[in-house]
Image (tube, rainbow, N blue to C red; front, side, top):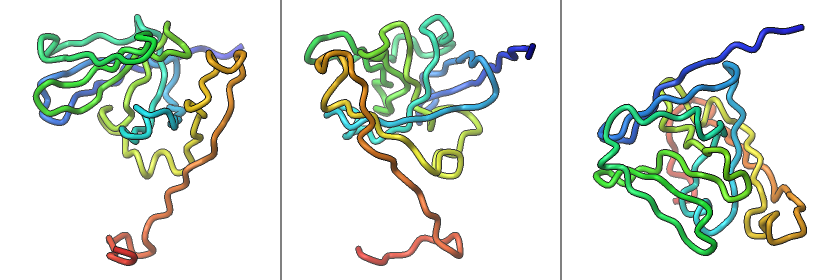
Length: 152
């Protein structure tokens, strides 16, 4: 029988005003995206933890919340730099979906090469409980590791 090792990761917004810690049940992060109207505009890779696993350690007074439509999802972001840190998910309101890019040591493109995209446009709560995958995003780095202006 394996031992469940908890990993604490620190995270913050871009300007550092909002800082938090999140407890993950293991060292591995499993990320996903969503194609709902909010998540499509954010474009963030999200990793999930229980609500009680997130503790804001600095900047609570600068953390703003945005909610829309059913009001269940609560999107928390820094009121100074605007970076989305985490949100309470509508599909799993007992969890926070953390923007992986806000976690220390995470390299979103290198660490999440293939990212499943959940079909939030046809949300499971509006679709007889059926959760669907919309597709998968894949990142392919330039062969020489440099940015290219092809197609711009």
